[in-house]
Image (cartoon, rainbow, N blue to C red):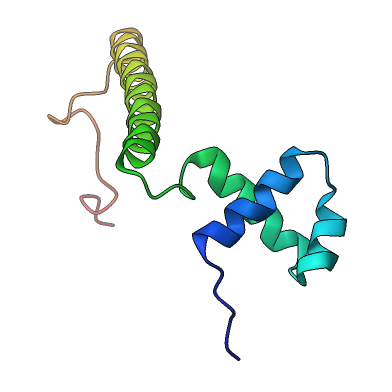
Length: 110
């Protein structure tokens, strides 16, 4: 099964017509393109991936970097919280010494 490839100009033409108020369904019928494909183009245009210009690509990458930096910050805060919680639990409930107070089931012979 081969897929039809559409040019960037064709995609932008369809998207411009959506901007004028034309419905996705009528454009899909007129250009013999699936509605789902048009919705994918809309999403790509929103993300800046449909524009091949360096500025649009850079803006998209900057958004992604910002999202990742926020995620790293969130995970760092969660990690610090969990470390402090573990320290408090270890202070409140210290682990028993491994020295000799506990007997191992293997050490008993009968």
